[in-house]
Amino acid sequence: MGCMSFYCYSPPLQNWQFKQTRSVTLISGSQVVGAAGRLEMSSNSPLSLGQEKEDRTAEQKKIDSQLLYAIYQLRGEAQAKGTPTEPIPLERDAKGRVLVDVRAVVSKKLVSRIQKLGGKILSTSEKYDSIIAYLSLDKLEALAKSKDVRFIAPKAQAVTN
Figure 1 (tube, helix red, strand yellow):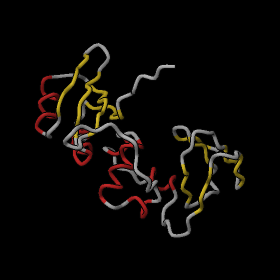
Figure 2 (figure 1 turned 120 degrees about the horizontal axis):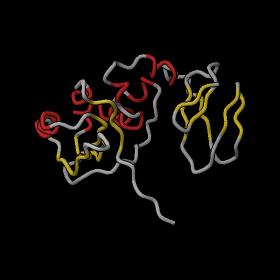
Figure 3 (figure 1 turned 45 degrees about the vertical axis):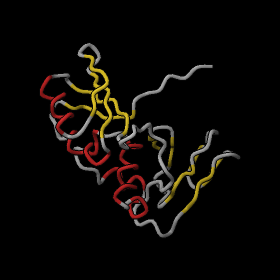
């Protein structure tokens, strides 16, 4: 059994889609455990999620899955790739750019690159190798090509009780 993010799966499962809920669903072999979660098998999905991950380019491997799924949805590729087709909840600005945390060696060159790609820098931290910015989904793969970029993820949001 392998785990990806918060979803665990077993290799025998093919062409599945997970409807995200607030409860945890464990998947073992071909059995689904958990009342609130729901696993849907889709015979019209040509790729399994595991296959989609294996087929990612070097740039796509630097991008968080939720961002990548949103990119696939934007391109109209989500169903063909067997990834979620439901809207991905991402924080966006008035221009539709998503709020991301770029983990990279912070430099003037990289900050300039983000701005040239139409991004808006909110903060940088050389200490934590982080740039928080708004950037269009369709520009993330171009940014990920930079050798200084290690990973791009949605900016973590603070949660209070």
